[in-house]
Image 1 (cartoon, helix red, strand yellow):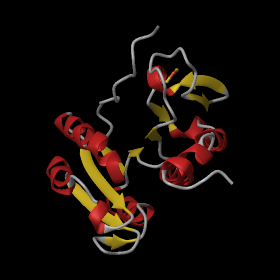
Image 2 (cartoon, protein in one colour; image 1 turned 30 degrees about the horizontal axis):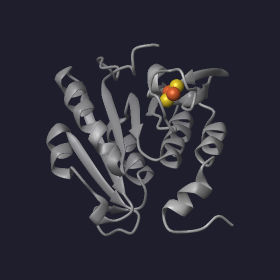
Image 3 (cartoon, protein in one colour; image 1 turned 90 degrees about the vertical axis):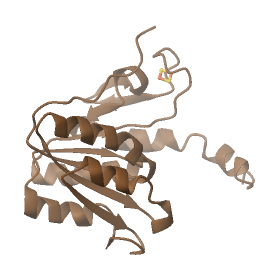
Image 4 (tube, rainbow, N blue to C red; image 1 turned 180 degrees about the horizontal axis):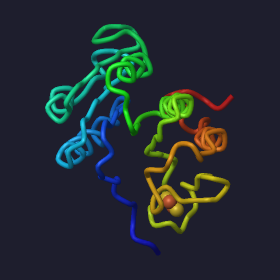
Length: 187
Ligand code: FES
């Protein structure tokens, strides 16, 4: 059994754009604090489907040099997903590094965007986990054609090497059971 998870890398990167989707803000806020304490310029982007799903906005604002808020329906901040303010952040601040914590589609989109802009990005993966010790294999992810366990090797990985197709397929493995849990039935 291996020690559980690895902490975020906190170095002197320059301008760091931190993207928090929904509850991902709970992970992003202390990272913003730590990066700022190392002299980085922290541009945070907080996104949610609608305003009532935004949490820890004030806390993230205090932890950041700049904060953009975006909601899909425009009920708070910029209308659109986090890529909309991310484009603005690139124009204004030219980030040296991105870090995203949120849903898998959001992190995948950020990864693609970073790749287009040739900027390194890190994402915090949240596959299904069971034992959290590196033994059960439930949280395995493919990174650079190698198998890793998010619970002990992550949760953060360089986005460029992640097999997002494999990850998305694995996240659907229990979809029917989840539907039942939410009151539906197995088709
Ligand atoms: S949760 Fe079991 S190996 Fe990671």
